[in-house]
Image 1 (cartoon, rainbow, N blue to C red):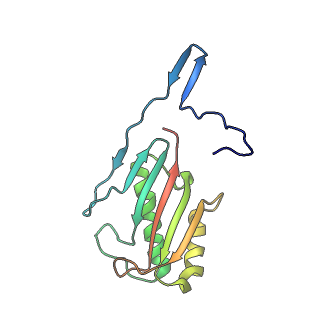
Image 2 (image 1 turned 180 degrees about the vertical axis):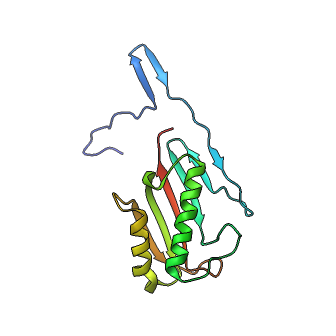
Length: 148
């Protein structure tokens, strides 16, 4: 798209060493981490970004944790942390989260727990109220940035 009749410079994916010797960027294949009983990868690295699938409040025993939004939020964020670790990342690397709450009235308690896990420079976040796929109160997905 041209603005005010001015053509923008071309976008190039190569980095030039000299005008006569272009250097191509290295291709980094997608990497999948972890296993699930459903068709998804808990974490996927694509270049410098790691995408964590929506995590639900299920403990290591495979059961939904007992309790309310505080307990479920703790479990979900523990699961996000574990998925990130599979790809060599931590919560400090998270740049974006998306949160689905079953009931918007749980936002205050959720937000208090969430803030403890992201005390400094929290990631960008979208939070919505939604009916969830199983009988749970929360689901969280995350995107982390850690150069490969």
